[in-house]
Image (cartoon, rainbow, N blue to C red; front, side):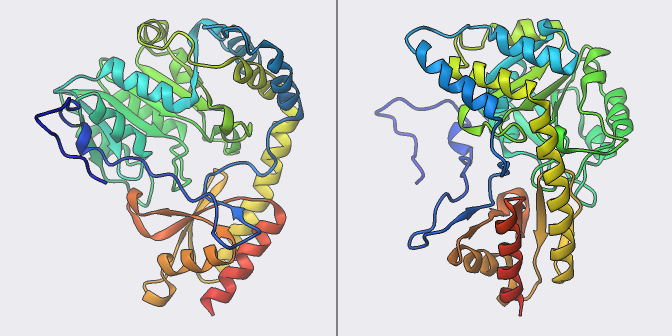
Length: 368
């Protein structure tokens, strides 16, 4: 539903009603008892048992405000990542931190550079801040550093890069990230959204810690919603120069992270065994799904995340839309990603073994 401005009531600021609201994926299928949700990039292994235990223990502290600085969580992140806690900020998911960065550094007349298949939130928050998103083309479903640099103007204030990217699963090698950073004016903030960093096992990848540590204009954001299995608690963090932390802290809400999230997050990130188990499981089934989908004749974008971008034939009867409807009728929910520039593709999250084998069987039937 589109709500139009009305002179007889309060109106949102210019640009807000031009934003296409983010639409989450399906959660259930009417009439289907057994449903496999393979649309949200959630880990099939769930959270660490230690995180669940810490969450349950936090029930006894619901009557008091949480620590507004989330010190226990910052210390756990710093301890496991080898970082200075003073350069860490925690938020209600990395979404909140990305939004706060946009609100802090963008104003009307400014520009933010985004890539054509990047996370939709970048555009949404740029417009919400009154600034203009500048979208650049990707090359072979990967960030094109030269195209990004060519798009930078004196009005550019932020460059958003998801690395690895969702929904493509592709990544930018660290030398390319370095080249991008070297080509940016010092006044432009480079934001590296590394939500899927823990899954990457490539020698030429680095999430951004090194660049943040050695620069004044780079921020790295991370999340507990993916490999740590805590999307329901909405926990994110960023590593940034002290001056960025100071600026964003001035606009951050005083209690933006709840006490249960702080406790569970600290326990989750310290459980390295659970993280490594999740990585090993994902690596096995990501490769298996890629091979099986390719054997079915479908093109799959090479991914380093916990999901695959699956492209369907031009045949109208074998399209992504038809495949999605057929899969859904069988209880397999994948993600339509037309809004990301892929009208004839679906994003498939690595799921539990029975779901992975089942989705291949259903697709095999569909493509006959």
